[in-house]
Image (tube, rainbow, N blue to C red):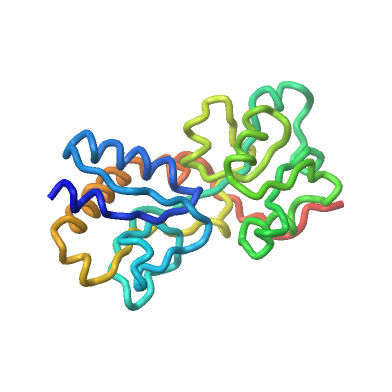
Length: 217
């Protein structure tokens, strides 16, 4: 049984990789079992067997998949305290880190194109980790998942939750696998563990920002 459960592959994105990695650590501590976590901004094909479980942001699981909704993943704009201490803060006049051209079709990139003047883009990042490091170090401000930003006490939200970027986090698998004890037990554990993180993931305590129109001068 231990060898079988270690075969389980979980696909996820950068936006929820940290809370999911923590949940898997708790799972290993509680059961002595493990699973392989693959982090990609693409979507591994569950039907073709590229992964057994996916933890992804989506409106609803595809018809061919069985899933459980975990939370609404919220995003907001964050800045480091040191950045805010350097000068009076102006959202439109700040320097930003934004997604690069490879992510141009992403909802966050579209929001940034509407809101951020091109002249204020200090850095374009191809990954969440690069953007996060830039913001934590005080080089720029930028959009982050609330659940990720909450792990860094030096970060401060400078907007409310960006309503149009909020998406649902689902744990999904093939219906046949969902009936297997090893998969069902892992899904239940991950769901319950992530449920405890839900206030952070959903940006509890932040107001909702419905900003849509460009703030460019």
